[in-house]
Length: 348
Ligand code: SAH
Image: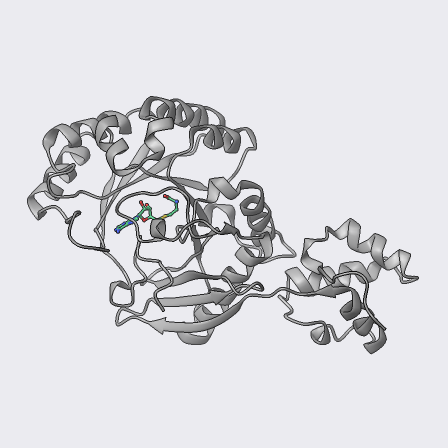
C-alpha cells in the first residue's frame, strides 16, 4: 500500500497530542505516558526499545512516526580529555558538540543552530552561513549523547550544560526553552537549572523576554568590548543593538531575576588591550552584579586577531579585581582538535 501521509517526528507531539493520537487509534491514553517516558526519559532511539508496548503497537507507531535521533558520526578526543562530536541530523546537516572534563565538572557544550547568522569577526562558526534552527529534540539529544560519554569514558555524571556551541540560542528561543524544559524535567534528565548557562551575543529584547519568562538558568553575555566603536567593528550585532540597550536589558534582567551575569571577554592585541578598554569594561560591569571570564583567544585565521600579552591580561585582572569584580582567566580546552570556543566549524 502506498503511504499517503509523510511520517511525523513523534517528538514534535506534546503529551496531550500523543494521548489524543492513542485514543483516536483505539488505544488507552496511558500508553502515551509510557511512550513519552521512552522518548524523553530513557532517550529511546527506536520503537523496538519500547518493550512494555506490544509488537503490534510498536509497528503501528512505526507506520505513523519516526524518531529523528541525532547520530554522533565522528568523535575526536583531545590530549586534555575534551571530546568533540560531529553530530549528523536527520536531514544530513552537521553540528558539533563538546564534552569538557575538569576535576570537578563534566560540561556539555551544545549547539543551538546549524551555522550562525551573527558574523562576529573572530569566530569560525560565523563563516558557516546559518542554515536552520535545531529542534528541541536535536538539542536534547546532544546532551544525552554527552551524558552517555561522560559515564562511558569518565565514569562520572554530566554536571553542567552550556549553550556555547554553534549558533545564537536567543535567535532560536522557543526551541532552546523547550529543550531546557525537557533537560530539567523530573521525567526528563532531571538536571538543575542552575547547572545550565545560556550564552548570547547580547540581544537586548530577548534578554528582556527571558527575564519576563522567569527563567532559572544562568546568563552569559559575549561582550568582548565595552566601547561601541570597537564592539561594532568586531561584532556587527552591536550596530543595531548597542551597549546602552544591552545595559538596559541587563538592568531589567537583574531586577526581575536577581541573577548575576557573566561576561565573556577576549583581550586582543591592538584591539581592546588598552587601559581605556579595561576601564570601559569595569564601568559596564557595574550596571548589575557580574563576573568576568577572560577567555583565551583561539586563532582561527590569518592573524587579524591575536591574543593580547600577559601584561594586558594582568592589567584587566588587577583593575577588575581591585574594584570587586570576580575575574577568571579561562584557558582553552580541546584546541588541538578545533573544539575550543569559536573554533566549531565542521572541519571534520
Ligand atoms: N552565540 C552565542 C553562543 C556562542 S558561545 C554567543 O555569542 O555567546 C561561543 C563563545 O566563544 C562566545 O563567547 C564567543 O564570543 C567566543 N568565541 C568566538 N570565537 C572565539 C575565538 N576564536 N576564540 C575565543 N573565543 C571565541
